[in-house]
Length: 299
Image (cartoon, rainbow, N blue to C red):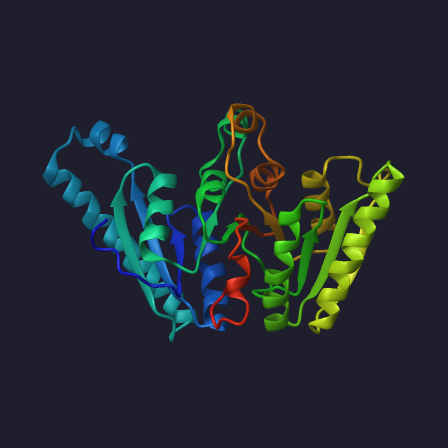
């Protein structure tokens, strides 16, 4: 990874030539043009796959790289047809996919990562899909895309709020995005059975609403009642987002702390593993999260 150039305005887009990764690329291009970002496409060659396929033959490996480079150039040209002023580059590296993506993002000091996912099924819901692993370990925002978003704009944002202190960090990001697109932000929360907790979460969401409105952002509050939304917050967030035809869900992520959490997964992972129509923005909680306010870039 010695040829990685520092670029804090770059949006990294992992490319495996699947339809979902190409959806992510076009999605990234739409927003990069609005926010003045660059695009860096990244293709990761699994080392074990190369060894198995070619038996470590250097000439064949080089031929494969040439073929991949050609495909990357073709994708770049497709994007430039729609976004001729966009700066696009690409990288090809070997390694474990999610680890390589995270390492590249750290070495580059990039702005964000936008990647496609097919979700996770069966055993992958336990061990974590590539997208959920990147989401867990990356220190920059990660947007997960499945289907190609039709609007190319974030007009409706969904902001699930709970009582964790990290949850409020999403407000800064919601303001930053909503101001750019004149979006409306839907603040949602589960209805608590306990009266004390119910009052506390209501106080929190009205505080969030006030902060948004003070910054010129339209905010709507919706409580996920048990009758219509009987699941946990992750599942109910996706259901609500689909019902209102939302354009983006904002969630916080957490590093894996222990074996039990790794097995059962966080709310964030469950959302990412089930993402379908609505892109999900995953924000890693940290003390410096507010540093992105006022910047010219995407985030």
